[in-house]
Length: 449
Image (tube, rainbow, N blue to C red; front, side, top):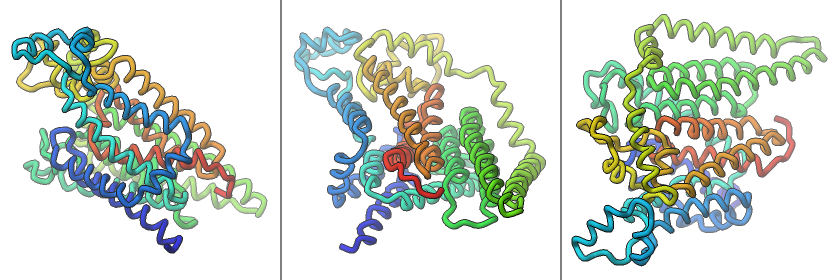
């Protein structure tokens, strides 16, 4: 097979998986059919790329492979049947044991209180693993192209979301909306996830190397970044607005670094043009931001007013979830079982007509479902991202790698008050962000940036 064709096939395969995940995977656990279509696309992509998967398993960093293996092993261990003497001795199994005694079914059972939900949770990992494994064989320039495609999907989200604003019904959304016409959702059911993906697009637009060098590149970046920042504000997601500081901070550092480097080069030639371009881009960004505030003061004001909200029900969920975590500590109730076990420990004074569904703190939910092992595993993943980000500093493509790590950091931080990794879209793009970071960190050739 022609070498260029051999590179194009996995490139278009990953692009297709990301596009399907973007279009269908933003609905969360309640959209089973849409999630299934995303996962079947990922499985279909894996079948003809067995060689790429083997290459990934041979050449990727050992810590990455170990964490992937442990992340799969933990929920799989939770669904292995155990004799009654073992599983009944686990913390929090009293209600399960009593209910089974009434039906004479108190025999072998899995560690998870609901093995089917745990098995379903394992299947959700196929999408990011597909992106990571197949994409590992791609050269860096192809990864950068995929990064620009992801940034373009951020702009698609903006256009789609702007059409939703002001609508009288939720017909313009894919998964419905609680407040039709008031929030920019794009292809998601959760505005926090929308803001998170827009933040990734912001990082990519600001930090990826330009496809072609051109004096107007800083100006174009400034316009794209201003548009994406506006869209993040219009999601009215407080966490997304706060986390936008990460890519914006990196963009500012890169702009300063680039300006100083180019200024030294221009000074040797007797010119100051690069500095003038940076100043012009910053001026355009400030002018555009001012114009946006003037054009839509009401919506932007409403978004920032949410930071003053004091009636957030999540703090009541966290109180009950903390108690639930102690019931099943240190082994957990089983991956994917939160919604069922939480209702047992939910306080009567906190009951509403709706169920909590999630802990709105993924670390707390992880403690309930997977106990100490889950929290340790999450900590190791965070350490791995930090280690890869540090290694990437030696690469000429370090800014692209840090665009990926900024998204992963944003996911880790948003997980304190939400559940970003509970939909297929964010999982797929998290897989791509990890691919971008790990590939560049592992290939540290010093070539001109």
